[in-house]
Amino acid sequence: MSNVEKYFQDPHTMDISGLLKLIDNINFNVKDMVDCEYPRVRGKIEEPYEKYLERQKLQQKSRELEEVFREISSLFKGAIRWHCPGTMINVNPPANLGAIAISSYAHLFNPNFAQDMSTGGLALAELEVTKYLCDLAEINWKKAMGVFTFGGKGTNLYAIKIGLEKCMNNADDEGIKNNVFTITTEQGHPCHSEVCGWLGIGRKNSIAVPVDGDGIVIIEEAEKIIAKELEKGRRLACITINGATTIQMTIDPVKEIAQMRDRLVEKFQLDYQPHIHLDSVIGWVYLFFKNYDFIKNPLQIRQRALNKIKKMYNKISEVKYADSFSADFHKTGFCPYLSSIFVTKNREEIYKLGGSKVKTLEMSDLEYGNYSPFLYTLELSRSSSGPLAALVTLKSFGIEGFQEIIGELMNMGEYMKEKINEDEQYEVINGEDSDGFVTLFIIKPKGYTYTYDEIVYSKGMTKEDSEYLAKYNHNFYLYLLEKQMKRESTFAMDYSTGYRKNINGVRIGVLKAYPMSPFLHKEEVDSIVDELHRLKDEFDKVKDTYKPRKVPHKPRDFVFR
Ligand SMILES: *Cc1c(COP(=O)(O)O)cnc(C)c1O
Image 1 (spheres, rainbow, N blue to C red):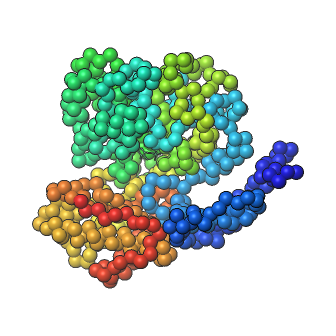
Image 2: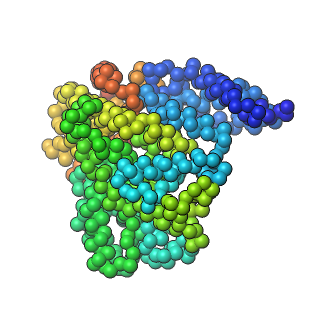
Image 3: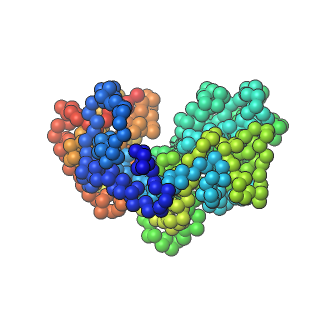
């Protein structure tokens, strides 16, 4: 046996105990750094990265994996444990075990999803996930097409690339010759314009149309803005709208926007249809409530949460009026990174991305040996991890599993809002105007009587008063970070640019609790809120002199601008 054979699975056996032992060995090294009640692995990499890297030398000799794992395991220090109920930082889920298992195991076959031939039937996973999503979205899966790609950002890139082809035949071959623009909204994800940079359209040509107080696109305004650009002879590649934003969960009215597009096509006699993409990387998951019995409410979801879910479902169910949509399984789908899929209603649009030589295959043409996504996808070699993880998750959770997990997160989001609001030293600021499970709130010193609205709109308050409160909240956030580091807090919350500006145009940062753990239930929320009260009382004793000494990472900047 050569020296390196031991690094591979023995081809003469299907016994994988060696692999399982290796995983067990990694865990053996990591587990001593973990206290299961806390959101982070203990410790952190203390030295600056340059210092660390200077010490690292690639070694001449081969080494035992046990030794390598022992070393590597220290890199887990400070890692966030997303499955911990107290972890409430962002829309970053714990990955479910089935998804982890299938993507790890499949690596033994290292299937390249560039084409199906070498993957056996595994490449079907991509087609099967697409079919399920189309069924949920009520679009014809036989005419549609889905491709997994490198993230939610990638799905937006696909949409605009398709839009480019639609608004000027052959942009792919000849480059962008016309004056092109795209539309996003003021609430749209920054990547909507970033991908315009990547595509050579230019970020500046991504126009953000205004939204109303709920973050929803104002259609008359958008229509006027687009008309003005079309009048100049510019071509509109894509209208990207929101299918749930990260914090506010804003979903734009897809049907009305499609009608607006049709009116503009008619009015300007366009020889193409501007593409409409629904960025539903987060909101797709509400499609699982399609057949939920909102009257009998079998999961006994609390009324307030139930109303919000129903509202979200009704809005996202308009996905069928968009030309394309997307899903991030690595967000609300509880899969490992990366697992994003872009789905378009008209399969020809995706085949066209491969240039003029690629012929569109109908669903009825596809069979083992001719499914070759590399011909038209952005990637050539393609990972199996995303599609396999998504498929196993869909098949194992089922519709009910997703209803349960999202239902409970929504439940706990509402419950947490109620609990936090019980005490007048706290104020939840997204109770009514957000339909997701995130809680945004501020804390107030004892005896402080202004409401957030009064602060935001500076009613009877000076700028100094507002700034004092903003500083107080940012300091508390730093205090919580330090408590995390000292293991004196079992939860991890975040700090976020508030979403409303005051009349002087000032934005005030707020505290953010974004739960993602399926292990968060009423009991855990009770104990987290109790702990929050305790920590605030402690903080109030030192609030005017407090300076953090040790935090797990560079904190978010104070927002008051
Ligand atoms: C997260 C997110 C993106 C970007 O997705 P990545 O997977 O991080 O690339 C795009 N749009 C929305 C609405 C998002 O929430």
